[in-house]
Image (cartoon, rainbow, N blue to C red; front, side, top):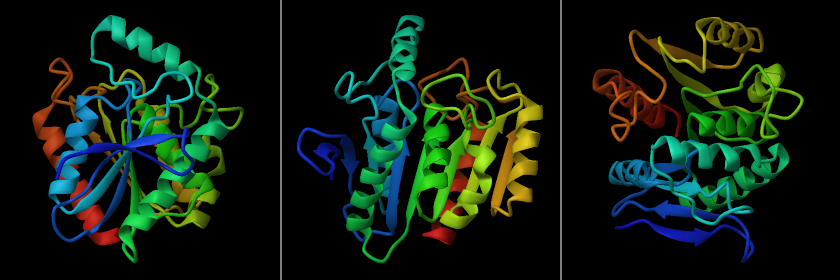
Amino acid sequence: MTGQWETLGETGGVEAYVHRPAGDVRGAVVVCSELYGVNTYVHDTCAELAASGYVALAPDYYWRSARRTGLGYSAEERDDGLVLMRGLDRDELVADASAALAAARTETGERGVAFLGLSMGGHIAVRAATELSFELAVLFYPGWLLNSGFPLVGPVPPLETSERITAGGAFLLGFRGELDHIIPAEEWEQAERQLTEARVPHELVTYPGARHGFACADRPDDHDPQASADAWRKVYAALESHL
């Protein structure tokens, strides 16, 4: 099977890059991209998930501004992505995540659904977990969990309402590199405390010496193969356990 773009819900609305497994479906994963959009790295991530039996759907959260954005990792393209990211609205993101969840449920039948977020997408996955009900949220170096500053965050950062994750039922699995310049250690520790106090089932992992973006081989200056391999082992174990 190969991936393809499909409309989720009404024609003219949010689209997703969808990759289905060739054989039996073990569940579905909504892949929420970095600020670079649904690029080659996201396509490859969807393909890997599909090869392991999971329907992978990667919503185009930028669709209201630019359709099917897929940027590379140059400084110029990062600036383009920041412009698009600053145009995202929290409530519109939740609406798009809800459409993706509904499509994922249709694909899986009785199997479960996970949201897997990469950087900006990690924030979206946590926000979705505070508003929607699904089985697992996987977060690779998620930003702005405890602080505002962008319209996509809104006035209340998602972990200030951690108890709503408990109500939604998601297990939260998060990864951060020790040298992450976006997520300081103190913030990760505070996230741990808030999740524990809200009784959210979770596991937060820090990889020594790893940087922000450590799981992406397309970012050679940041990629950490050992940390990435270990994180993905944990991801597949969590998918097996929760879906």
